[in-house]
Image 1 (tube, rainbow, N blue to C red):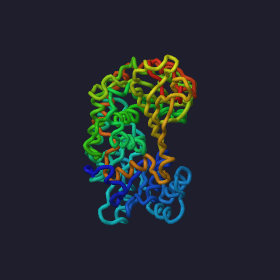
Image 2 (image 1 turned 90 degrees about the vertical axis):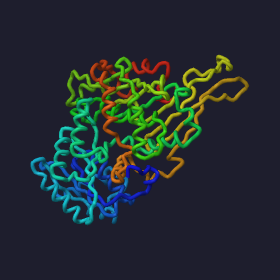
Image 3 (image 1 turned 30 degrees about the horizontal axis):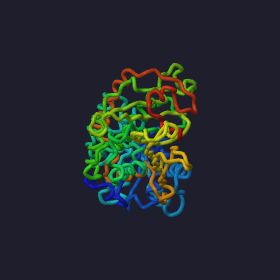
Length: 483
């Protein structure tokens, strides 16, 4: 499948599969994986024959019936398709459970063997590791020691390390059992329909690609504020922070798609090669161009150190040293407990000479922008200046908007996890992160990790600390709204 483009596998159905969910009793499986797999099944996108084996340590083991009951509850609460009818009956029958501990993998081995015998032939194996980082190495080693990894593929959840040494160690652990062609590091952001649309918007339209460069674009913003707080995840968040949780894992990946050169095809290798070239061109992060914030009240959250320096917000300036983007700053922002939850990429175009217009006519806040909202189903807005009606020459903002929801039927569109699980079953690595790219991102992040600026307080429900406006000057943040 490595030579197949994304357009060619549209509507393709994977080979027969046994899918093993490690961490099947956890929150990710409950909210995303089980509902997503059922939606794929109901949409006819799973193989004709498949089995899904849940797994967890023996102390959290379930019987097959208990796992099926939990799956029904998960789909009823979080799924887009109701757990009913023949589709649910068939999906439910595909479910089984096999506990696994490093010292006793027997129940899992038996469950996988039974699933494969029920399918017959030679079904593929796909392992999804929805487990805490501390359990990761032991699961990989178990798969290698038992032979379950032979010929199989593996989906790896973030975090992909916490710095360069840990990322290298993690990749070494993976590669001791799985070669890179069988590793799928999943980022659900990249499964969004609108991320694919960035590729279509850029490379399928002669209107935009000729101006997608430093000659015409003054700056780029990638803005992913979150309205929610840490949601009781103090133990995870205290050891991670927003930079590791969001910037390295998500926003840098989006930057790669926005800034990449045209690939020769949309097959996995050329697409990922171009994205990795962007990462290679990134300059090391300058802590002087980073704003770290912490929302007021964070230190009072249960499980948080009262003197915590963990950032719940970060905004930074990224620079690329290549021919297309030299001199164009990329501003990235994400954080918790902000005013809105949004997913926005904004390209600010250079201002033309406005001397011909009277001083009173000139618009001094923003002129031309292309705004890509990649929160599914997504929208694209072009912002520009027009003349106000009337005898005087006065300029005002105008906007043209393309909305997916208003232009297409998105009822059967796939969510991020669904699309990426399907891609992994098809063997398409286009939207998954490569080991060398991950290591490069941690490498350029090292100066910031070694010498982070102090956190600045900000009010919950705001857009972050005051320092963000100094960071982006002389430009303005696209959010909140128009100014």
